[in-house]
Length: 283
Length: 264
Image 1 (tube, each protein chain N blue to C red):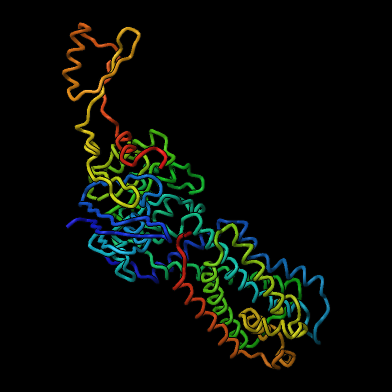
Image 2 (image 1 turned 135 degrees about the vertical axis):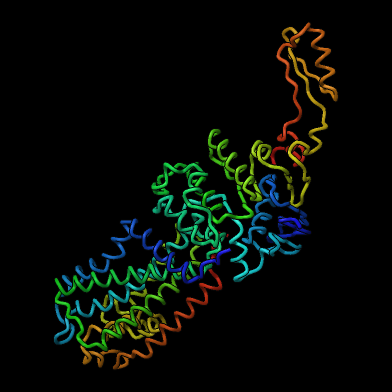
């Protein structure tokens, strides 16, 4: 059985139908990314899975449990999941280690506090007050608090917003390490390169339904779409779309007698495909 | 697989964490703990006469200060700080962990009780040292004092948590909560002698716990002969107990049923 199973999920706020009949299944051990413009129903869907919101109809199972259930059973369930939310700027008067140690006390089988601090790269800040951390360091703390309970399933909501490129790269390797340790990760992000670098599969949500679920390389027929070959011919940049870029490049190579000036062979980026799928930039 | 820690266990741990966090916010520590002392210093210096033979205004005022300290430290502080915690996402984060709501409430109750005890010790020490405050000598009065502080602090905590659902944001919370508390203090005879207030004010005040807490505290700090000067010609301790208990239950009910972890 899948780790997360969603069938016919709907949710409305007043007249706004945020989610209208959404189906989704996420397998054990994968990094699954949900993409979609603001207002597409992304956050609503994820928050229903996290047990933060109620649904109107449809069935939802997360780790074999209905997140809408209350009471002690939901504690047992929360013991097995980790959530890294979008905004948080709390507990400024505690130190990194105090906070992580305290949160580790909420779970039955927490990870080792020192190990978690090291894995998010906060060793040098372990005794620092949270309010003195930079934005990126704070985000690392958020992740540390999300994984301290040793979750089978980790929700990551826009985890690298405000990171510099270097911090993002090291964050990505942290996420891959977590997956290698056996966690399943549900990632929502605005950054398509992030989804491409991390996700095994991506789902594009628009207007409350899933538009497509696929690997990042195959999304929207990307892997089979025409390639664009571009080169310099005298003082002109020329480009041509083709199904057979290799043939074109070798004929160009023959024409230029070896090296083709400023040669670029490209396929549509994930961003191109994505923008096409959600129907324009201004959604 | 180990078991998840119990709600009480986590509540006690949260209490420790809340105290540690609070102790590091120096401004609020000073304000919370010393404010009643400062008020006593002002009122004690201004009103130096006696309100009855052998009873100084300070003696009367200390009862009111302890009672309203319970309201300020519990109800007011929580109804303002919880919306702030909600604004910064702290509550939503907690909601995502296996920590139950009851542990969060227990943690707050511990924080309020401990800061109340410190506040009272300082106030009494200061009163005895500088304003001729006389401490009760009978054991029964100290027992009354103990259950008043315990029940009052629990009641104030529960109502503060319950009222935290009212302010829409942390920024606006103070504007919503503070006027209520100040008006209640005037109506309940904290700053004035209660029996000298207009009857309608007395009747309004009798609905709310502060009047009863203040009256209960007077039974501790004023001579028993003074009871005849109360509205009902007695300290009405049983009624006080019942009123506080009812408000405690109301507070717990709304805290459990309506507590908001998230802004929307």
